[in-house]
Length: 219
Image 1 (cartoon, one colour):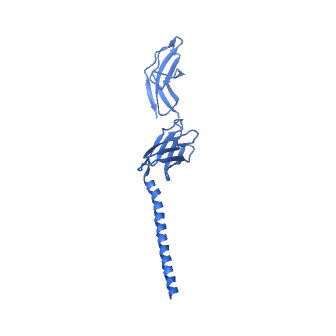
Image 2: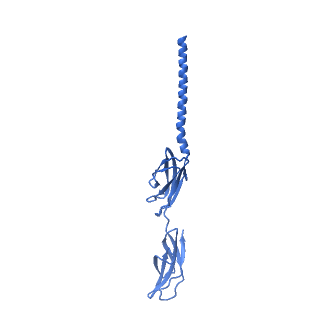
Image 3: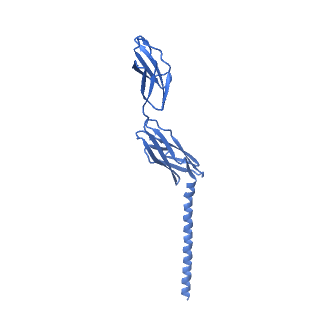
């Protein structure tokens, strides 16, 4: 009877110890999980997505900024990366307490027209967030024309007319000799540009004063 009593007491003691260990492990595990979760909640990025629009004309769209914020004031290391050759985020590594600014740039050189998607990854301490980036690259603007018409000069010594073309009023960078035509379609004009035109008459004695100036915006 004494032997049996001791065995039972030993089992009860072991059972209590196992239960105590279980709750101890559970409490420690729960405590470890709280840290990163709280840090992640305090880490925000604005805006949450970026969009770039560009055309295949050599003009790079302006850089954009990502703002990183957190509620805690202890210093943390910020690391950034991206997964596309046409996308750059800088700095790659910096430090912050409550705020940090990141610059995002794109390079359209050598890319075909289309829509490109990429992801920026930002890590603050042990917490990580991603920002999707979309770039839409349109085809280059097509060349356009402007048709001019003017009243004929009645002078029998007339040899022809010259059309003056420029992108600044009164400043012409292109001169086209059109012969005796009284209308002409000026080609090779670029869209999203305003052009200015004037016409002169000429003969063997020289060239007349320019006509009134007209303009046309090419869309």
